[in-house]
Length: 296
Image 1 (cartoon, rainbow, N blue to C red):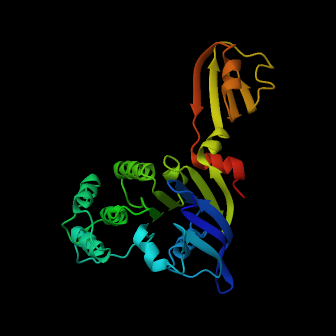
Image 2: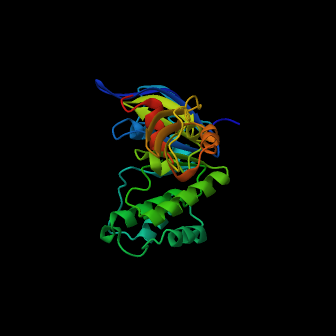
Image 3: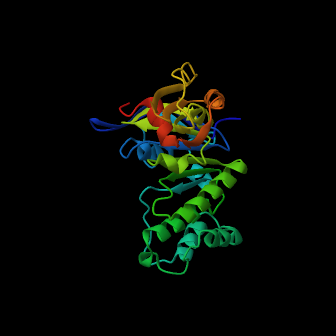
């Protein structure tokens, strides 16, 4: 089966300044692919070239087996898009906006759209100009998913959403992937994608740093562990334990860092009388910073 998205040596230059440089990666059908990096890293440039909104300087992109440049119009029938800075018609209501875009696509399943409106608690019958940023964003999300596209391209999709709606969005993304459709999720907030992504790519200064499996990243995770013991531990109690470093002992309190599997550490602690144990689980940001370093 061909990749849902294939990017090959993509470069986009803006005069003397380069937006992205020599990017290559693939996204499988049915995959949730997180595309991560700080603001200005090149994420939106990648998305705009992927959707043929701007043209690459060099390189190629295929989406669903189609050339994004040659077959752009046909391709967009099969793609749902949330732009990072959506432009809406303020005088239209949310419902009118969805019906307008639906008509351009040849019609929508209104029952499905109404279900999405209810799911995201969209104030669908108020003019968009009167809505808050978060409520406008919910309309934008619904229009992206409304025609059940084969590929979703989402640029900072949860901007302005409250935590409850973010959870609902995560659930919808997982359902979409379970149906075999593909989600390309761009964000500068690493924690935003860690609960839904299968793989993540990180881009910095227009260049791809790495593409990693989320589960593999978590297996390499760094945990901060603090244990309070009933008695001071032997001097060599934590020596030679695989993955354990930065051990400090202050009387009965032991602090350390554990990388990867914590099974060897748990077995070592089992030989001691532990009064209290705390382990701070890493999030994806911790993993990236520990793996790639804060300064690249």
